Amino acid sequence: MLKSHSLPVTKSRLEEWRYSQIEWIQHLVLQHLWQDTFEFLELLQKNNISIAQLVWKPNSVDPKVLQKIKLQLNIPVSVRDYDVLDNTQYLDRLLEKTETDICSILEVWWYYLQPLLRQDKKKLNNILWVVEITKFWHNRYANQLNNNWSTPVPIISLAESSVKEIEADFVSKMWVMAIDLILHKFWKSLANKNVWLLWFWMINSNVSKRLSSFWVRQMTAHDLSSKTYNHMKENNVNPVDKNKLFESSNVIISSTWSTSISLQDIENYAQNGTILVSMWSRGKEYPITEMKKNWEWYDYWDDNVTVFKTFSWKEIFVFYNWVAINYMLQSCPTEAVDPYFSEMLEWLTMLTWWNLSPNKIHTVDKDKQKEIITQRKEWYNS
Image (tube, rainbow, N blue to C red):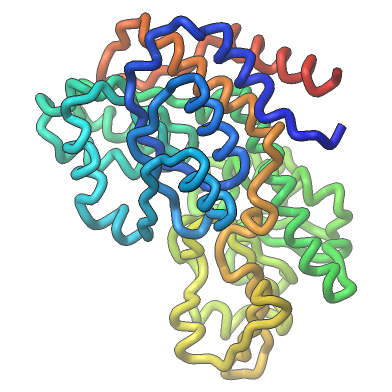
């Protein structure tokens, strides 16, 4: 039961399409580097599918996996921090290098959006499509298309897929488990804690369901928009003003992408002993630079907890170096990622036969999604 099956659903679907034209496509991959990524890339390579370049995000990498990819797969790997990916033309140059090849882009963020916006449209004729897998960045592509962005490159989104929801559910479980694991090191737990979810959207919706099974005392939320009020109530989460949340919360879980809590907010309103947890890989939700500059601080328990002492001598605890807490457990199990890799592969294998229209976000057929989910259940129940 514990033996690794190396993405069995993905493998079986790839074998079904072994005679497709996928082998002549070069793939630009921007991904997390966990064991599941290694297994996916290894599977592609064994089936003569070429990876032109792999770029990984700095906070989501297992050094052992990186080493295996370099030594065993011999794939070109780039290590670039967020500033380089955001504010330079590094990815533009990767696109230019592949101008003579037919390419597809597989990314876990929206990093290629700006390079695609900057490129001469005539130079993009070799790019078949961009596959995007996260809802937040699906919306960024959609906004550009709604603002009359014209691109010859079709955008393929897995973000709203029922297959993707399997992975999202597991990721939310990893977030909660990682928080509780750190608390256990101090002989504590999430039980009877007041938890504040800062910005209530799909991720925090899943997290709230998981928190319920850990007997938290109360879940409250402050959303930067008013659109999710009813969704909060459906998940037994109380919407509250931000300052009042500080007064009643032991644990703050934030997924705002940008900094939305100031140094003064923490100093003035946070309780002594408040725990700050991030859900974003960049770790930008909290004013960490200011906190380190203005307050005394030290790392504790193998750097998984940073303790700050405010001007008023309150202790504030930041978990897991203020980056996404689920990375502590490598995001989610390989078998949970297997269906979404299968769906990605569905595109890579089938789309070579389709003439996709540009200036549009495409999704996988609902029947295909059900087929992948059924196949996953059959395999993992066997």
